[in-house]
Image (cartoon, rainbow, N blue to C red):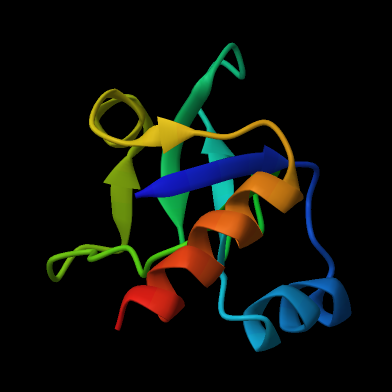
Length: 94
């Protein structure tokens, strides 16, 4: 899975990315605020940004995914063009 980390995404901007086939989630900081702790569907308190992915994250009956675990097994891209390019390549392969 490819992912791109951005500042907090407001609802309208989130919908724009989702219409293009991407998935948007929020990032929660650790209790001391020193690092990103979790990826969640929506974060109200301790929100430190958002993450956009080219595939849906499976939360496995939890409300969150551990950020470090996710990052260690997925690939970060550094701009939206790369994320969209990868998404479009997957569509063309179907």
